[in-house]
Image (tube, rainbow, N blue to C red; front, top):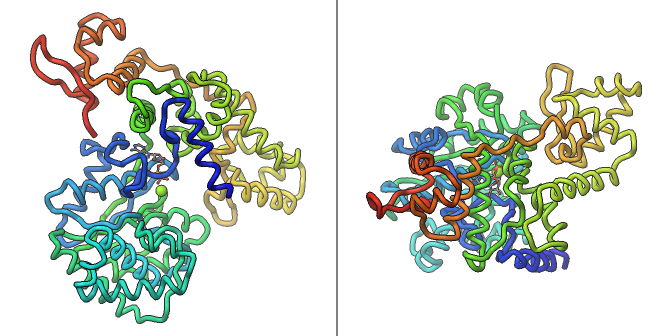
Length: 506
Ligand SMILES: Nc1ncnc2c1ncn2[C@@H]1O[C@H](COP(=O)(O)OP(=O)(O)O)[C@@H](O)[C@H]1O
Ligand SMILES: [Mg+2]
């Protein structure tokens, strides 16, 4: 019941601002058609001029299949990055690659058969979506896999919705009970499916395996074993396996497995956070996409608040949006205007502190504040600081971990190092808060926001209009506009006096 009421309530709140839905939705941009934020319109950065995109493309250009690791912090935009490339390779490439609707999410203790079944199901779901069940059934291997998927589906009712919706097969976080079917048979199905898909005018299949990062921290042994057992499957011809993981995965896991390493592209592709301007641009794009009337919507927050969150979370887009999600609905009840940055900061700080304090003992709160001051910490450091036995510290740390306030970062021999989570960072003592005062926007950054906002409401702008809008000399206007064209934000239409500028598509 709760789930049903909440979105409606949310929508009413956003309507005040002239928006159809929540602009701060934290889901990765995806290929599914139900989303209100289509990836092609909502994506920012990650274009072909970037190092990460070029590296991935070089691998995908290899005929015959490949394997690559994408690394980066949780929440920087890895899933979105890979989804964007899947979209491009499926829709805008000469050598098109077939790809399932959703990413395939590995869960713990998978065997080769789980891996294969999830792939087969994801492929068959996409085929049904694309050409319909009738056409699918005409190809013997598709028909067999479809029938098989139905058997699996009956063995586990919880996946019914997902499968029948053909949204993404069994891919997302479902753990399917696999009947005892020989792995060799599943491998045969996989190969044959890929072969048939190629006959539909595709150069290959692009598989996005998404959440190795979740497996890694706790259990490096099973992830190693898993990679070893899927190694042969990863060499299926014409399949491009793109694995998403956290930083250091290649170095710590892949490199220690020579047989596995030999089949992977030599180094991982690292995904860095978007720049501050890009994050603000991404949020502006969302307002624009969700606006009921493109001329009339109101920005819920000032850009300087997004800038503040950017500095606080070192550019991590998921955390930025989480914080916006927390603070904004609380304040929306009170105003229909853009919420001031000061008000939003106070509200956020207050909300987080209130939430955290309600769950912790006074000592645990003190410990958390101490941990905040350290980059990384161990049980012993806390025990020394508070003069309490390490067994008591261990209990408190367990509690802090359960509440997602700290996490295990790494082990060095017997020492276990923890870090504080980004969520816990918001509720910070004043001294810490001071240290991350937002860096003010430079004049050129401010002017960039102004013109981008202007162009989201108006189609085009002329040189002179721009100079008036941002109150600069014609020479500065020329410099700014040239720079914006060079960095791919604007395009110039026409020549001489009649020329004007538009937002660059995509
Ligand atoms: N390039 C981008 N352009 C616009 N929004 C993005 C971009 N990258 C990430 N996001 C948004 O940031 C949030 C986190 O992205 P996600 O891909 O889920 O990160 P990760 O997979 O690294 O945890 C999501 O809400 C997503 O929509
Ligand atoms: Mg992700």
